[in-house]
Amino acid sequence: MFNEYTSKRQKMVETQLIPRGIKDPRVIEAMRKVPRHLFLDEALWPEAYEDHPVPIGEKQTISQPFIVAIMTEALQLKGREKILEVGTGSGYQAAILAELADQVYSIERLPSIAKRARKILDQLKYSNIVITIGDGTLGWKEHSPYDGIIVTAASPYAPNTLLEQLTIGGRLIIPLGDEFTQDLTLYIKETKDNYNKESYGGCRFVKLIGEKGWKE
Ligand code: SAM
Image (tube, rainbow, N blue to C red; front, side, top):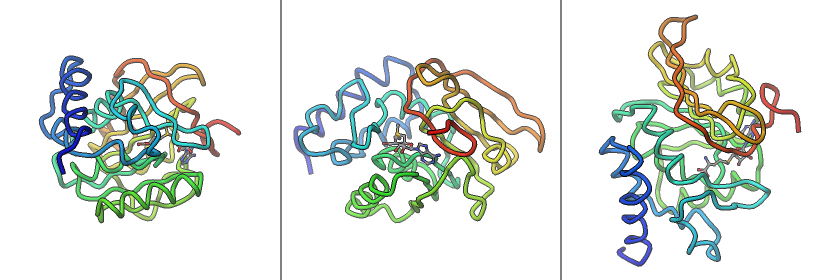
């Protein structure tokens, strides 16, 4: 259905993503398609396509559109991948991943947030996203190994549990730093014990709280 949000979404892509270097046509297409406002409370719909994170309750946020795009692009998805997301939040990033990969597993520590995400993802008929409630710093061994892992909360270091659950050639994108500022860091698993590391620039996320993250 075409509405005012459809044109806001196209403008978001044209003004916030393409000029800042997002190039992957599949990522651009997914960002043009997924109705980001529906992942927010209706009172916040007018802010949905602005260039900043937006609150989703319980002191958590939906990430800024550019951050969603750059983290997704870093995974270099072709369509057949199995992906793990740590930090389901609103469910929006999971929907973008589900457009671009075969299967998405997503872990959220807060039950009320996970429930809300599931509801909207069901309404939008995303049948290739499985959500569980738990500590994502431990990964989700049962479905591993993953071709890509995306951590959407700030971590002091890259948990070894997540690195271990990557395929050879798999990619982990994670914001690393302190609680105020982080560096988006990409790990590419070259062999069982060797990782190539690249920086994707500064960002600011809420804290990853768990056994291999921050303590509450
Ligand atoms: N990807 C989300 C989206 O598209 O809306 C944004 C995620 S929000 C910035 C970070 C989320 O990570 C919060 O919902 C928070 O509860 C969750 N979180 C923090 N620590 C976690 C952990 N150890 N395991 C799973 N989720 C965690």
